Length: 447
Image 1: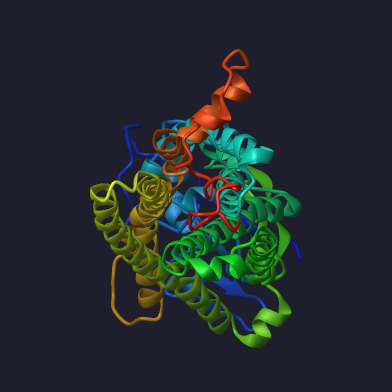
Image 2: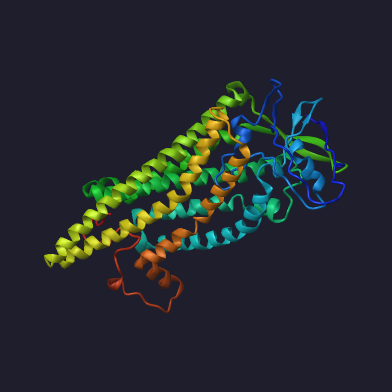
């Protein structure tokens, strides 16, 4: 299907100065099969599902003198519609508040990408060492990989669109639009979902170690942890599988800046229209809100409280052991507490950035279902900042491991500073690992 849409380029301000922000209007997507228009109150146009790149149509546009005309008309033509062919198209400028997206996604994100790749690569290298191979470390390594992929997949698109200033240009041909959608939204969502569930698995695993030590012999073995990680990965992919097939991209000819340009338009797949677009995205986002954001965050808060309470009890017991001069047991209890404290810090850092994202996602669903009215421009800004701070948190785990794990630091020195020899007998066992595998008195020895 080919159609032509006229995009006006003659509304530059007479003074040639800065443009005022257009008023808020409804961005519209069109369903070619039923001639039904889905406005901004529908779930999908208002909110994409990717973690670091959640994007929303917005009315906030501005630009330099070379592109003022486009920013002036951006709100009207973000999802412009040819009256004759009933065909809509979109552009990247309309997906995020540009005054925030350009500095955060275009200028800050490349540095965060480099830092995240460096720090998480070091985590993977260190935790993959044979002497560091424990169930807890395996989960931490998987989390580092997922976080790294979450920012790597959309990086090329972010650089092209925001760093190099091409966000105002129409995106084409259709295969590139599909590729952009997959790497910008679907793959980052898969990786971040897996990271969330792995963090929950880590908290559950540590709770079993500390509060139900005998069960750890059965449930926290390396084979079981590897299978659990595989299942989490598969379910994360499965819950996004429909997103690969719910839209079809088509070419569309428009007149842009006085010249004919081919851009992308999309129509919902036949099976989505059969189910119902609103019903499909309602189910999809409700699943994400409940099982990817709210429930995991509630469980993580609960396990963190339980672990902290157990650690306080262990500290009281350690004081008694110290008074009784049972130094060996006292030391082992201290090692267990240090490992627990470090994982509590990891989970807490995760919750600090994930809870706001969960709240914003829930707000979007409630607004989309028309339970109450809220300006989408506010949600747009909240989304872009919550996503950005989630990405900022990715390199923090490396600092936590280095600061709270002696064995992690020693292993780092051993790998990258070969002249420093590490005496294994002198290495502290209160570390990122589950305790020395030769000692049978700690909670983690069975692993």
